[in-house]
Image (tube, rainbow, N blue to C red; front, side, top):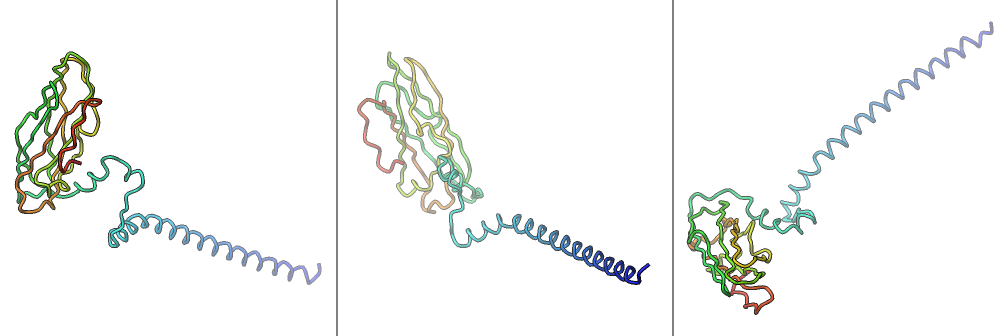
Length: 205
């Protein structure tokens, strides 16, 4: 046997050991990189929100911004202010021969407290009609602090002759309401769609 064969075998063994060690080192580095990437991705969402909050950037997605309840939901995500009570009065005006009223004249609520009030409507005409309500608020400075989460005024309604319906208004008052406001009046004017549409009450939204 040639003396070069043992040397060749030894050299081949050293290469195999080096390759094995190199492969193990590479696997270890890949595991560390994957772990770091996973941790970074997991931390991105809260980190992004904290950065946006610190810079005052709106972090709502486009779908959330286009959702009818998105603005209200973002406003009412606050704690109830038990130190204050606000009287909310309800006024209903019907432009036509039908009945329209709230089931209660007024309620007392805390800012930040979600409240539901029911309204009743009856078509006293001998024909089917479609109608819609326009809301308004008093005093004027309460307008931007009265947030409706659900309201029949968001769409028009069709009622058959003599038909009656009950509709909810779900609202919350922003705790940032000025301290000098202790009473808010919510007024609705109900008018027939397709008829002579009245001008929107002052301050309506």
